[in-house]
Length: 345
Image (cartoon, rainbow, N blue to C red; front, side, top):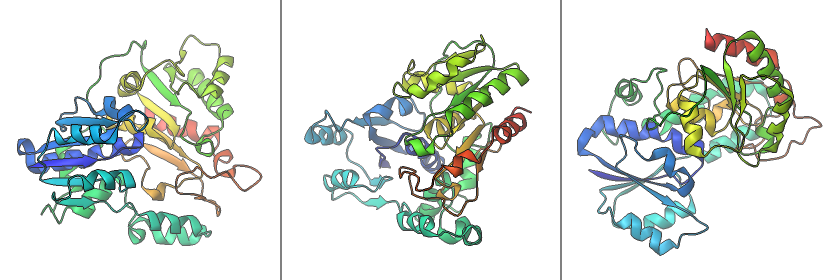
């Protein structure tokens, strides 16, 4: 059995789809060959994954399409194409293998859009996940496809197969060690869109409390463009290591894999941490946990305020139409600190 899996982006979504990889591997074992197609920048996340045989990267700015398809053909023939992205790009790739059986996931676009239009907190609580079909993303594809694969245990079997320390269903290859002194907590204040970012002053205040109340080191992880992380410069402690813009994605994964806890926004960093069994605290602003991207590990948690105006968009990319970003500002440092104390025991 040879399956071609397609998920180009984003980083967090690619990580979450490793739950599907683990599920398929639990069903077929060594008889399964998995080829995974993703964006070039995420290849380093999946290379060496014990459940994936081949990883093929696509750079939409540099790669010629025919050459890319040629690289995918190298590993053909495929018995099944599993489209985990459902975009025009993935459709275009599937047309190059039109004679191969294909399955395309239901991304619940209409359900998520519908949820953004409901402005009643009461109704949103009544609807819940099951009525909208918005199960956690790590479970959703397995639930949708398990009958086709004649698997009655699905999610439970995946957890048993994975045997992760935090009951996580996702996984990533074991990375090398990045030289960080002592035990440490990762603080990840970035997100793909500005409205999804908890105020940087709150992250700084939280970091000061963590340094004051615990003996852990703190590591700040963010990209080169996240200049707002310069605010951590006001903290004068030898236990704070600000690595904003100083690490590659692979190095960031090395750091996250050995953290005691990761605290961040609704973004890919926390998904990477959970895939390595690290508990996380995820802060939700304009997006909503009902979309299915809340943490799933047994020691992980999240904070999200029930406001009439949220979720205001399916991705958190839309600017806030209120005077203040209340969904973020109403999450206090004290609340996050309490979650951190609980996670750290």
